[in-house]
Length: 262
Image 1: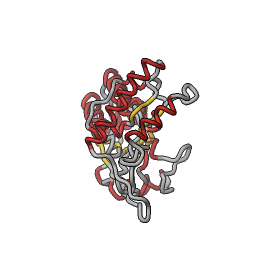
Image 2: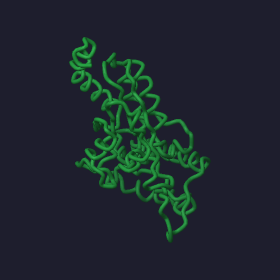
Image 3: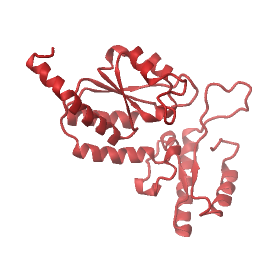
Image 4: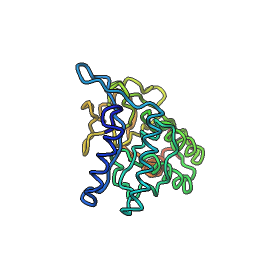
């Protein structure tokens, strides 16, 4: 985790040299910009990267990658997606992330999302479903909204994207995986969610139906009066659940058209 003015610059370069010397014992190094919550009372002063600092840091990582690839056969060091977003810098090709070993740390998620989005749109077709909503955090909002718009057009769906801000942690926390149940309750418009709400699985505790603030998914469904489906945070996950739901809803939609189930 790189903190501007503390462990960047020559300190970061030294850290990188010492760690790459331990390869392959150390497989890879993720460069992640510090993220600050709004709860830092009585803690050391830290700040986030400026756009220019993020741009320069991402460029430095790419320079190191080129050197390591030639010397060790691997790029070894990878910059977080958040750094590219902050820098407003184009992402590398998906292949540049090699085996995506750091994807759970937010390294390569967006390039993979874009690649999978293209694959899904190539196979997607019309579906008959009621109005559906999809939740995302601020960081992924542009990519999720763009994909959802194109998918809705391809499938003739009413697919709504709701961007939720993180008020629980506040500060500069914008990733989807740290949203809480209370964030959803406070910000989702219950009267315009449609019939089904898709929630990315990264929002829940591992192996549980609980948000980080211990709200249960079932409680959220009751309070919002909506059917909730948990989906992988990936275009294929969204498409698979839509395709499955379409098969489940098809009898109801057919009956409704015949006047048998108004």
